[in-house]
Length: 462
Image 1: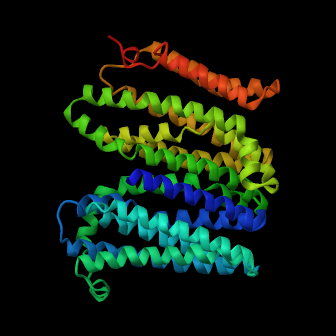
Image 2: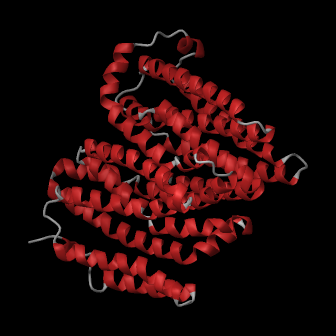
């Protein structure tokens, strides 16, 4: 039920993002994308991987009053300071009043959503994930409904972001107040609680890797608009790239939701034996890999139709970016790799790769965009995920027992070529999109099922 609720939440949230892009237009939506990106980066620093740590610690036993007061007070102080600093930055960097409104409301939305996520660790630790998920669904439905009525009224459309800002704050307060009531803690208890620095030092040694990975990942996902602004590009450029990124984000969130139930199973099987872990990993990898390649093909073939249908003719410039992002729409596979690396207790590897990419990707953008234009972001979005695929796949292979054989790798390569290269030829020869996709879909399914290209027996050496 939680997975269904999360799926509905992502669907409603995605629909709201599409309508927001249409309502605001490219200039205002571009400003929204910029401040959304900046806010995500700022408040990722404020979270610093604490959500998973608190969920783990709070699930050990009930009644952890000191833990709640210690960390929740710290989180409130740090994130409030970050919010105040960000609001001042909005005020002094934007001269146009409507842009200031967009920047302030967007900052408040991300601030409240981040706090809701962190404080939801208590609810997840106490098996109340369904409540949190439903609360998020209700919030998005109310935002969507009231936002639509607001749009039909005579108010200036850039004020429409006040609605999600208001309901984000309300959701956070509900999450927070429930914790205080259940743990019998008053707000003054938290205000006058003396933060235990020794406890913070102990936890820092346990979470710093996760926090660093989370910050690096957030910066990588949200660096496009700040870099473009630094290089002097316009709000229109932020918007057209942001629209294509919205589709990519929905794919990533969907993959994350689907694989959320896999992590505990992988962890359990790895604790039993490497052979058991390998068997589960490969059983999951097959459908994830095949469905991801089919999804890439679908998005490549129908990119133009998807953009124009969802966002309208004003976002026609998004189509080239959407096509390139489609080639790299393998986030579900990368999420599976990430779960597996955590299970193998090799987070240092993820951190090292993250630091390299954190340095390399922004540098490439800064060096290449002035010469070749913002389409460089699209090319990095197409090539980058596959570089990550190769690195992570090769790394995990070392820990599988029994090992994957060369025949499987060659057969997997054929499926990748079918899914990614055939759409290019079909487009060149003006083959009907629906015919192209059906042909590719059938070929991949036949290849993977009839001939058992990815069957468990063909994966391993004997």
